[in-house]
Amino acid sequence: ETGVTQTPRHLVMGMTNKKSLKCEQHLGHNAMYWYKQSAKKPLELMFVYNFKEQTENNSVPSRFSPECPNSSHLFLHLHTLQPEDSALYLCASSQDFGSLEYSPLHFGNGTRLTVT
Amino acid sequence: DAKTTQPTSMDCAEGRAANLPCNHSTISGNEYVYWYRQIHSQGPQYIIHGLKNNETNEMASLIITEDRKSSTLILPHATLRDTAVYYCIALVRGSQGNLIFGKGTKLSVKP
Image 1 (cartoon, rainbow over the protein chains, first blue to last red):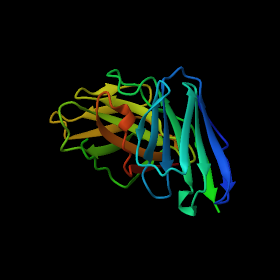
Image 2: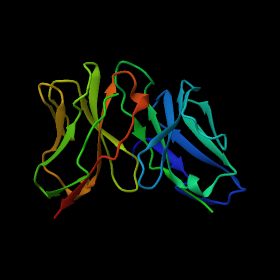
Image 3: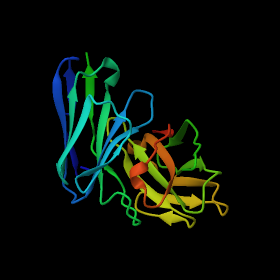
Image 4: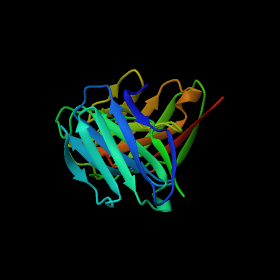
């Protein structure tokens, strides 16, 4: 149990569907992250929210749309995805983003997304 | 951030110490060394971090050479559950949100 819960664990969607991934953290953290892990590729940072404000967007296509309604919840809205978007999507949280006191990232177990 | 180099894979016998090396020859003075691991079908898990002194916690020990160009993560008594990909990352303190995960070392602990 990492304190970061992602749902669903598995998702299959067609290219014309709209779906959302959900992440919830019970650690009282203020920063939340979305990472993408494709097969045989390193983890890629997608988005960062710090105190509900988006601080990082690593050139992610607009078909991925994040939402952070509060410090405990993070969503990734998906629409008109491509098969190459199939990957493991990981959510993480930390106490703060950029704090000089190191706060480890706590990851959820991810959502395995398959786009058909 | 400094580039790190790790062996692609390593084996370790169950119950023995697992020593995972990492080279970071271009590390700067304000960069820390962080270790995470990722067990199959799970998200990465933080293990330990250090600047120049050796560090130990309940999971592992981190030995950093005096010139800080390399380090070794030690799992003192490896178990089958320690089979995972281990990532060594060099990063300026305060920028933990910019973790860049490389390919890591796939550690296989064998009975």
